Image (spheres, rainbow, N blue to C red):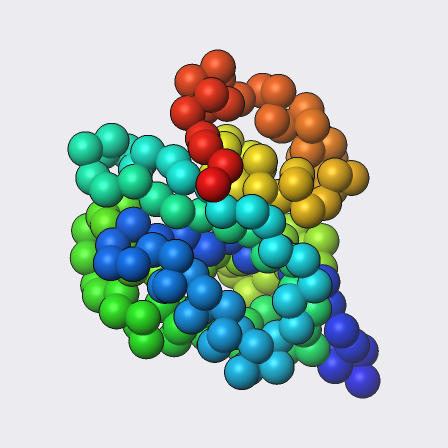
Length: 165
């Protein structure tokens, strides 16, 4: 029965096409409709698009969730929500209506061949800063580094280019 136990996970949601705010709010509604409980939500943050800063700016949040879903089912629901909100197969890092990344799933390091936590999350201001807002004591499960140290390792530009909305 341990696979049915409730797990804590963190999701990073982003949008840089259409009504970014509504896209993210709808993603939250769809998560709730799939019995995913949102425990905490960060503020909204705006960042330049990466790697092409000429693309529309992203709006991002991080959610702390509680779920009894296993990792594969959670990932599947996240992908379905992205598609429901208009995401199409396209070039990596291209603009999109909705992007949902599982940042941390129950402090796991690798699950079903997927690297966790998200392999580049520790270098992303739009993940670290909202995550710190809702979970000041979070520690990277693989690197064993406290979130404050991860934020301080970001470049000056990364720290100053993110804007809380």
